[in-house]
Length: 250
Image (tube, rainbow, N blue to C red):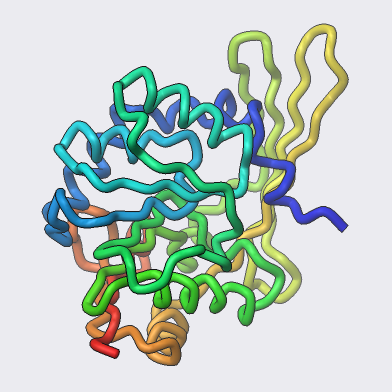
């Protein structure tokens, strides 16, 4: 059976999330750089890099050893076009599952921005992402993950909405899974001359204590939580959950 994340992140994704643009990405990176202070000359991996907007923002900040990894061939192709247009053909793009990062002890920092954690059916599979990141980081390397704040998502859940985007009609439905652990989203897109297309998403939402336990099991230390990339304190009402952890010296 094809997993939802294998079909959702195609060309339509760029239109459906057009508000996630280069300006927002530059703001994210400006905030990130004050949060973790990575060195521009050291290897940095953008995990689930999508169409490369954060890689572009990092390149504008002078980062010279950048790699992007994503499973979507369509989004990686768009990232390549954008990076080449910015004269950054040296940025390496790799198609791979995030549970199987093909490096060991290499990156000084791994970042994953805009909800790419919690995609898999089981917690064990999600933990494989953390284990893979741990292997790929150099000693004392930093992992930064931007994901959902469970309590805030539940409190602010909008079950249904409809909007227009150019000639597209977009109908969105959201609900919690029966066990309350996942937020599920169905997006139906209709436009003139084309059949209706449906995209589904299903993301596991973790409490900060669960994240901390998982990170510790896989060797990470010094875990910190923030409510956004600007470094504000994490609370139940924070818009996001940002966790930052360090690879131990082993």
